[in-house]
Length: 113
Length: 113
Image (tube, rainbow over all chains, first blue to last red; front, side, top):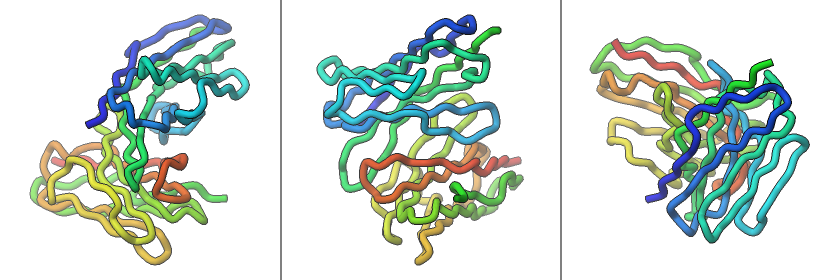
């Protein structure tokens, strides 16, 4: 089955710096890749997603890139702010008549003022 | 508009008991998925329901079951609880059962003593 690896497990940056989180997936049939932000004790919040027919997507300070050949996708956060501190999860799924999101192990991002 | 709502927020049970968790999807969404999130890990897929029918099942034992009602709300049932069932149980809704964005509720924190 699908396996998603995520790196790094923790990431510490200074406010204003950029942060990059990388994920690799195993199933070449995967075609939908969302990213979730989960603050302590709260729900995973969908922050951006990308489909396999697109190489890059941007939403203000957040961008996601997808390399289908290498089977990896990345989350880029620019001009980080303390409120960006959270655990970020990548996920992958494919069309099988239903949607099973397979999640990475998470990246704890800490943005210091 | 209300997001995904789950009840109860917290639950304490003992080994061998059973539990029922409830989820109401976002208005207009017809699909509900259930995930188990163990502390420090990403969510693991349990079930997806669409239009009251089970569309997909993850690698969980038969002690786990679910159903979806005509109003698209859903219940997750777990029988013969084990210590290892202690986790955050998340419900996510999406407009259809395919590769559509899934939006999560706050979850039910289940503790088994």
